[in-house]
Image (cartoon, rainbow, N blue to C red):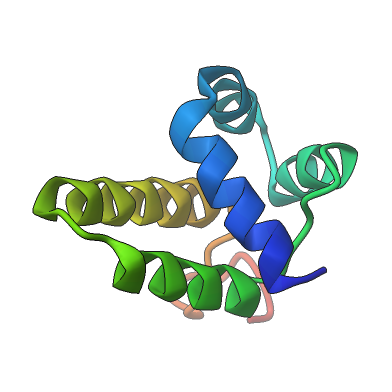
Length: 96
């Protein structure tokens, strides 16, 4: 797991519709991690953030920076929708 893998993911994710479609079709965070491992581009959340800001700083045009920001929004939304919600203890259905 490296920042280089996250940079590769960003580059490929921006240009490869098939990769994005596979990620969108995943039904869990584990499925997303499995896809990244299969593609040999596994990384941590911190590595993704570092790679994102590195790429964002390299942007020469506003449109390019906007595209990077949209990609990060897509990634965050994808991960958030797959991650289980934290229990706030508002119901009696669990011990959380």
